[in-house]
Length: 116
Image 1: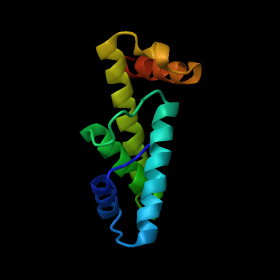
Image 2: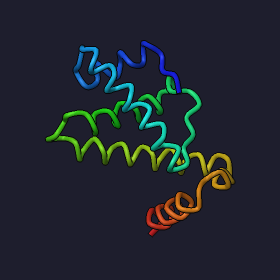
Image 3: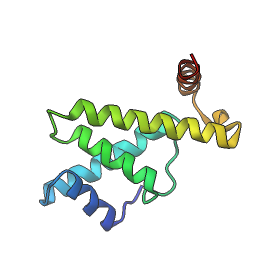
Image 4: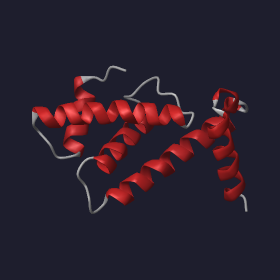
């Protein structure tokens, strides 16, 4: 996936980096985030969309040198993914047919846990 220069600059500001190495690192992290989202059944069509942008920022913070707060950022990213995925399921009433079996089981388990 191609990311705009503005998005990469936003991600660089998020991790408080300015170097060319930081630019390469956040680009790699953004690509990894898109793959990670796809693995749980969230398909990114527009990385500039606000929720996607937030997911990218949280993913970058969770994987780029924030050792002290890394767990917090990763948990926030996971929670955002869960909300987006469940929201998609509720809105489309059948989006789960596009999910892998593993992702569908995880969503079903999360939906069940949320209602217990």
